[in-house]
Image 1 (cartoon, helix red, strand yellow):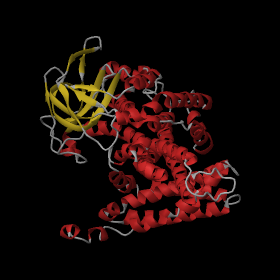
Image 2 (cartoon, rainbow, N blue to C red):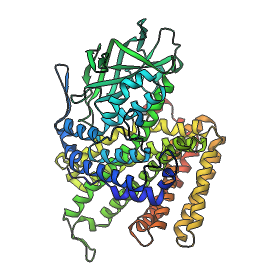
Image 3 (tube, one colour):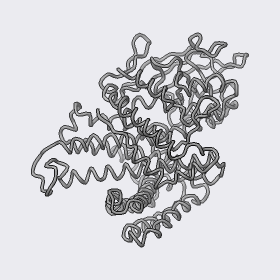
Length: 570
């Protein structure tokens, strides 16, 4: 399956729209200048095009399988992973003290998205490791860092996160896994975990599991949970994989998509583990990993959207069907107005979601480099939007890709349906999009909506600057901001149940307005060019959706509960 990494799009966004120069002006990231960034994106793009892209269909047609307790990965995935590891792409943003590159999260986010577009099933493996690396950097002891970080960063070992249990999904505090002290600084971890992405593989020397479990004195709920590092093979005195630990893959989940990514049911039977962070402080440590993963999952959605768009466009440029009335057109279905509408919507939303994702990554970089609370608050606010809108974009664009193919989209041989099947789970894992939206209107609004209003102010300021050259687009964005501001003021004063009932439409409205903001910036930077034309399409035809979302968001919870449970079933 062909794929072309959108390197030029990333270069444009970083340099022209999102102020990458501000990041490299800091001492922390001074060496990652524009030339370095361009070289990194170009090399990563080549790997995605030449190595990972051809593996996309293999993962779907030759799924990972469990044979007599041994996990076998899809054809070519081992070589694909080695290309990722040997290129240093796992540890791009990791601490150089342990072998990482120390690069901005903006570049890691870009590379992760490109890998997702090329082969999402395989990209999940390094993404899980990256989250574990960050969690260990922040919470592990020095001794643990010395053993595990170099191996995880090099890609010799891989990492996972183990939260979910059969009875404890989003309600993590209901978990039943236990950890008993062994008296020598280690713990015996027991329990079963489900939905463990890349819980095992046949190409890494070791697989390191971060497992949530409860100590004997741990109270009920999330406050009594601790985090443990439980390796597949216990490192020996030299830090090399030693004897097998008391854990195993019980089975692989049979999934709608992502067949190349083994989603494991893991069983721990007194497995040896080491405490990460403080006793009963597991959730704080795990959220470090989850926040990293949430941005990464948003990038997965954007990456699949890019892949699905490219796949649909290629088909539309080749397929001849009916009369094409466009003078000087291609003679293919790309000249039909409705097909062109779908392709334009797909392309416009890919740009919008990508810009939001990179803006979030940039805020993380500035927070890391400066330590300023303002940047960290901005990153925290943008994270649920980047995750939810990025994944919703992936789902919507993949679905439209099937539609562009017409009947052939429903035929598996074309590969169009795989994008939709693969991306659908991204709206569910690492916190469902409903949970992301609830986080946005609750925890992220604990400041009384101050961060939301600061972002709205920035969008309006740019709209004012754009009025002399782009009056109609600028006015549309400005008016959208005012509507969003009013809804935000209503939300801050609303009862929490009313907030939750309108959380998803509010998040989608905020994302729509942010998308208009970044499209308008593209129009200013590319006057008369293709990006200005795309911006006009988005602002005139797609941005107005924000108004309907905000009407929904302000209706409160009463209507959602108007039908009783019995009436819902009637």
